[in-house]
Length: 296
Image 1 (cartoon, one colour):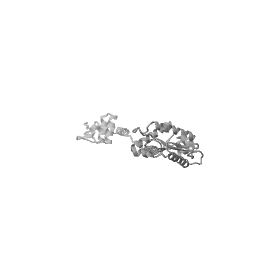
Image 2 (cartoon, one colour):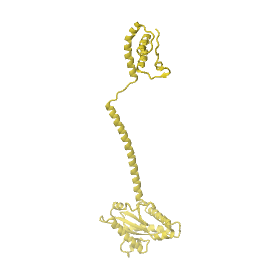
Image 3 (tube, one colour):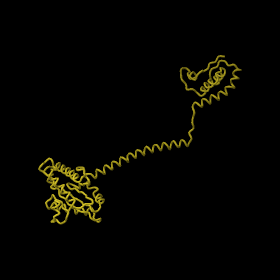
Image 4 (cartoon, helix red, strand yellow):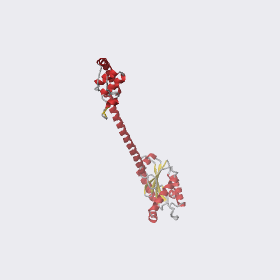
């Protein structure tokens, strides 16, 4: 018997120099050939699958035909196992879709949280900037009302004003005036040992709150600070120039008093100090009393 068969899957697929994708029939033929290396069975398989056969023995064909059916089933099963297709249940597909949505939402939430954190940080920075005087580094007018309320009664409010500040600006220029303000603020901080916040409320005016204090004690402390300014020039660019200040004190002695009430009293006493010669502290409404001389 002369048999022209394809011994390998590669040979089956190369006809005329062209490569053809293996068909299911060709896969079965190769699988059956690998399961039973019998020439007759291979011949019958090749004949049934379209290979060229020049001669087949009838008896051999009859014997092989019965075996072909069994081997075809086994071979077909082997081919199916080579490319398994796992069924996807509807529930699994729904879970996968929900997981994808959850991942997308988590990513979006992370972006929002990052932006929110950045926004909060920016607001906190802005809030600090709004409460700080950029020239002196002291606190500004914002928050002074709240600080006054927190201090409660028996708090002395000291309102300080640099004497002849306009003359300093006019004589030495605004840059020199800025240096005076910065140096004055730094020296006042040192005098208070950084124990109390100082507020620059505008121009050359400053406010300090002294909780649980007496006005005479605060006036004495300010007198010491005034003496220190006289012995050391604030404006270092001109040795002939010294800086002094006037002050008015008011006591928050009952809960019915508001910030505005106490501030007005301190401002009136500051005005009295300026009218009576400057470089002094007034903490009494009686301008003829000796407390003015004591505080000066």
